[in-house]
Structure formats: structure tokens, C-alpha cells
Length: 135
Image 1 (cartoon, rainbow, N blue to C red):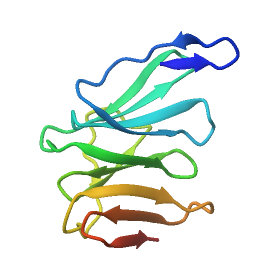
Image 2 (image 1 turned 90 degrees about the horizontal axis):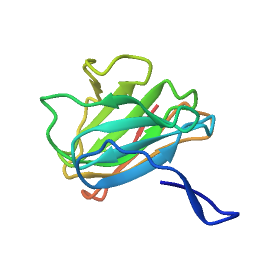
Image 3 (image 1 turned 90 degrees about the vertical axis):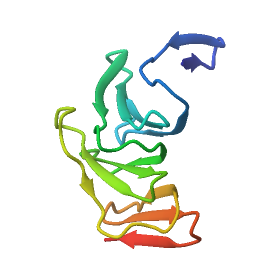
């Protein structure tokens, strides 16, 4: 739901996920947002079109998503997963795409993601107590 702080009223409701939503982050231009859920999908919602514009999932990926982040341009959406993996989704591709998996998994679930301000590095944090920086 999107709420108008001036009057306290709900102005938009976005539906789609089939399980708990664990992470949300704004798209770089501020007009959309991405989510990650225990239903094993990342989704992209555009507030201007009042709905979901893409769904990122794969039948071979069955674990929940703990965290999401966008590249600086918004072209890439990163998802951190319960199965210790981090996948990269192309936000312009259709929902049948195969994601790119970062080559070195963590030893426990990925708990957080961050992209630096310059946009040329991704940091993944995990319950294995390690941070990995991908540049």
C-alpha cells in the first residue's frame, strides 16, 4: 500500500506476492520499487502505472529472497536468497529469463545487499558473518 502522509489515506495498493515480503527498495528514479519475497520472486512495481510491471523468478530457484537492490541505472536488480546465492535480474527482460548467479556463494543466507553511490560495486552481507564486495 502507498499512503498519502498529508491525509493519512491509502492511495495505491499493489498485489502480487504469494508469501511474506522481506525486502523493498526504490528504483533509482523514485517512480517504482522492487520487492523480494518468500515466494521466491522479485517483483518490480511502477507507481505511475499502478501495478506490477515485471516478475523475476525461476522454477529452479525455490528459496526465499531476503534482500533486493538496484544498480545505479536500474537495469539490474539484485536479489539475496536464503540458499546462500545472489542472483542478478535484467529489469528490461521478460519474466522467462535465466538470472546470472554471482560465482561465489556465501556459506549461509544472504541477509543484505548494497550498491555504492558510484554504482560500480555491490556488497553482499550474510549470516556467515562475511561481506563480499563485487566490483
